[in-house]
Image (cartoon, rainbow, N blue to C red; front, side):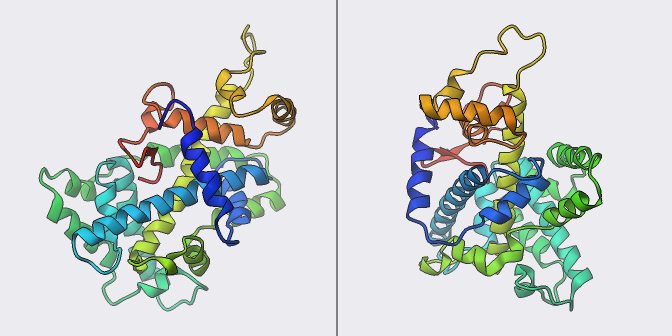
Length: 314
């Protein structure tokens, strides 16, 4: 990513304007609430998050299709996505745990009908199919043993731990109605809207289409991308908040100003003071910082980028 966020954001703007009407904005607002945003996340922020996630997933699908073609396959499969994620060990480890969980859940809920759930198309007599698929493929490309070692790794996931702690803090002051709403929001995922998710990614127009397992992984990566955007935006929001005793707290950063013209900036600052919700400016600044290997977000920075765009998904 360049020194500004113009290139990716211009891509996002053009992609959203030309995209069909399928939208996950309402669901994304609920997801963002469950991940740490205000109880009523801003619609404009959710629209921006949707554009970013959609662009990331479309680019990921394009890359996966290229990998699939190179190995002479007719569909995009889990192997293609695992191959693309091999450089980011932390996210790959998280995905492997997710696949193990899905296998385990399949054993528990087998025979129970769940509306439009991706896993229904993947249930089989082989109850550890996801885990075996991943293990066999990683074994075929692992030259050092690092990838296979992740199956035995019990290391605590600091990111997941932080999200759980944040959720616990969120619920401390909730009444029963708010808590019920929060719990319902935590159940939302892209995988529970399988048909809509396929339409959203326009899979029907692709020459090489993702199979059921690949769609399951893509749905997982879409949610993880939303979660990471919220994680990073909350750090930016905290960083931008005026601090007691800070002689420079009255100043607005240049990076904040660059996303607003003079009229919009005045309005945005007014909203900023009145709302605890994540603002579009927080998301844009998070993306800008994520693209640089310096500063407080550097530990979260992707190990590599493709097509000039830093990837959050993998």
